[in-house]
Length: 433
Picture: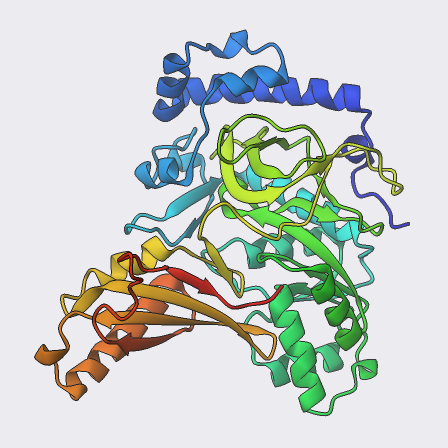
């Protein structure tokens, strides 16, 4: 078994862990009630004062925090500290021009780094490894989160990011990369392209891959392992509660260990919001515990999973969540980028030549996800072919820039996407997990 990075918390007895969570939760509620107007109002409406929360399940008396709540607070209304104490900002694309913004203090970054180092250690990585990071570096949290976690572990880090496949493989060969971190779809793409290029994976030094940011199955894991000759591990995180480091598999690969000393997790019925027992699939809801700049209480993730609190053979006592394979909404995750149809709609509404209907079509070509946006023209008779092509080019540029994702746009005839009932299915996901 691999070494446990932080035995104090990762192997803490459940009774002690529950007490730690309660103490940290009480502290968080006091802070958000005092400094975040949204939570002050929410708690007053629920007639719940912070000091009244004497048990973890009392948290159910508070309503959920949603992504819409975060968008309405843009940019700093949900922050629990003044901006002068915030040293890092990450944000994602918003559906109506308002992204969701996440801030970090020095302590937040220190905790984040430690959590990611935990995940990497659980996968068997050590200071002897050379880690090649395939995630992008920028406003999203993936690249930076894994980068600093790997450095804290003592590993050598290669921040390759979005180089093309031949260059990625060349770097793996030259620097004898032992671990890669990225999306599972890109790992599959790497393996397939290597086969087409006639490259033997035995020529590489890879032994571990840590993958996340999009749904993937056990079949996908096996395919990655066969093509790249490594052991693949699942990782989970989301920007709103801090980025990567929320949970990851250990070498037993029987669920993702959640950092419960930093997050209180609930599983609720997506329709009723009522709590579900361990073992039943429902929507994950997270409350951050020691986070300073941007604490969240009962945040609905939209991700569906189940929990188990049975001890793991690795020695960790932290709860484990099942693999995420589906969500409650029509969010698409494409090559690690979150895409909401509402975001696309907001862009399209800026163009008067565009009709009411559009559809996002996601496919998997050569193991890499592709996005095509079908857009109805408003009135075909008012536009020349040249004007239609110009409109398509403008839409492609605007959507690609807004989403931060390469895509294609196809213009279609007015009303051609509508069903007999007048509705347009906004998402057509043709990927097979």
